[in-house]
Image (cartoon, rainbow, N blue to C red; front, side, top):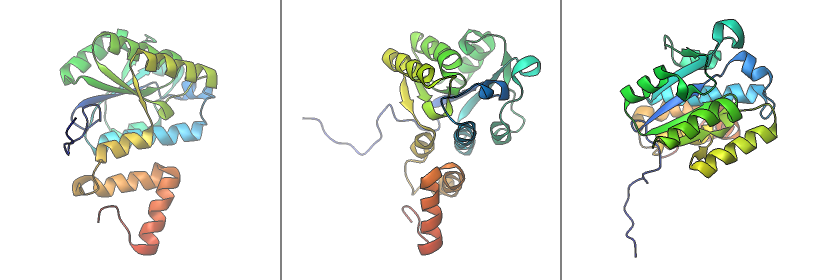
Length: 217
């Protein structure tokens, strides 16, 4: 019989054990995205970016044909990482750009979290490539999108069948916090949840306003 031990499972993410790669959250790519509402997509991308910045997660930003076609990266992401150097590519598969491989290797972490546009092209490519090379891959499904629901869902299924682990944007934030007694990140986690956490954020506003409530405090 196994023995229970009070420690997190190895496949749970912590701030220091993974790299986040945000791919092609750009205007032109968002125009044709139909599997998720553009406002919700921007909200979820902001939640992920703020979470990564708050917890000092190693993050790689990358765009495709920014100047000539696809336009600027979402302001919400840029604001979370002021001064960050986004790698602008020609490759649809981010993983085929040597600069990405160099940065991944320089960071040196075996777990990689992906989010971006479109799921069936710009996410499938690097996720399958990373898995093939022995990395553990996670996909933040609601910070991705595609031209149809079908395209997004088939892409998610393909990656899951290959071994990728799906998650959501709010799940990503709360998995990094994981213990409300972690006071150094508590306030910012709550603030990010209130700003971008939908109904959960409304619940936090209500609890704090009406009762002065707080998780674990």
